[in-house]
Image 1 (cartoon, rainbow, N blue to C red):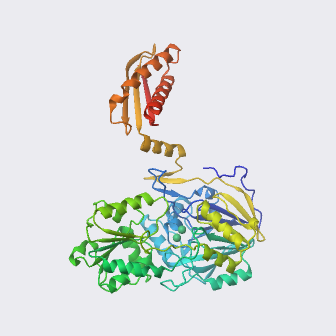
Image 2: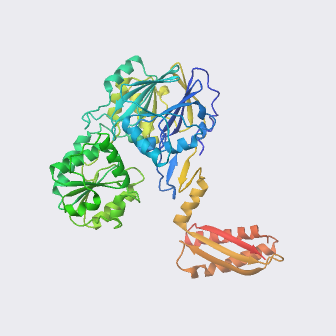
Image 3: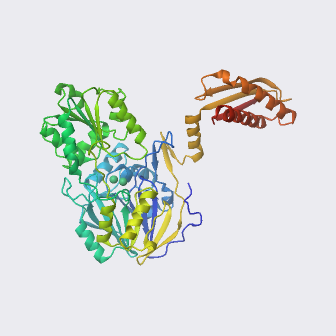
Length: 562
Ligand SMILES: [Zn+2]
Ligand SMILES: [Zn+2]
């Protein structure tokens, strides 16, 4: 898909000591975050994530950043820094490593982040040099001087990075908020950031996801009373659905389980894997004897909590299958299901249908719409303002958001005193150059959508997605006609078959006569070759379906000449 600035041309060759910033994903969308920095023939990458498809992209499993820009430049890559372990930041790493013809690009990140990436690499038998870093640490990578700063988010061990080059300094936050009472007491390091502000930050690249949410995100700890209330009140079992990487949320449920004498089982592959890893690395603290295998759960009667995946209504998840009676765990009256999760835009329909199904089965369903069982992982407007005032960046590039988020973040920047001309609300592919701390739009490159559809990876065209939508929503009609190649006379047909259009084939009775008349007219005018007759078939059927049936099915005419 072309960028929306056709007036922008490809950027010129990069000058010496100029830093180029190219965003391959994450602008105008929540997902597939990936930013490239380039100076003096050295590229440094921050994040490489996945985007989950929307309802208007039927059949698509996942969407990747477009790596094409790296095609001719891969040899320049010095390293890839991963801010935290969420799929929208690390999920495309296996695809990038498979794409690159070189195998020595180091992956840099915190212990938890790198552990989660390593699991992915292991599954696909990929390897890469690893560099584990922590807050306060610095690292020199060719032209890039890096310093890592603690930030908190809905997964432990998230890091921001201060990137200093000959062209100036950039702070990229990754995803963050400013929980002042985090479970692990690891706060966003405002003290260090204020010092950075005093030295001068030329560009702040900031998480804008919640820029249009007023006020401050409440602490993670604030959801504990509601969780405890519903777990205590539950007559039978409790099922808690959450993101499989939300270690602190799971920790709170474990703590309540201990207090209320319930056993806990993890359900779902990613939940079992991630929590096993988190416990091993001591991010998750589990009391001896608390955890049981979910297969043994019946031995413990009703005094159990099942923690599972599927809070977004994902069709293969444990919760989805429970709601649809397709899981060994049978949900029934007296059970309480808690969706301790956000509602990612686009997933509403699937989530509401799960809530309905679970309610129908007799369960009590608690979710963020009726109780405080979820808080966001992203800084709201109040936190962002506070942050801008502390850091006083010269330029602002809102990242990680749809247009409404990016714009709202930019407006907050202006309110905090950053000049409008120093705020860059841009789309993927728009290239910024920084020299001596000054930033300019240098041009634009093409950034496409790379779709994963089953085993194939590629740039599926918008036309083929449109075909899928038509097939899904309007159905399909095929019409087959056999004609004599000598005189164009109909030998057999038209034979009309439909799928997903009508149950009643007699409906086609009246259009058959119309088709025969149209064909006779075409043949009489000399338009009797197969492609011309196919056109007549498509046009006549299409007009009939539109006018008489108010439908726009996909029409596939086939004319066979004998
Ligand atoms: Zn995140
Ligand atoms: Zn994110």
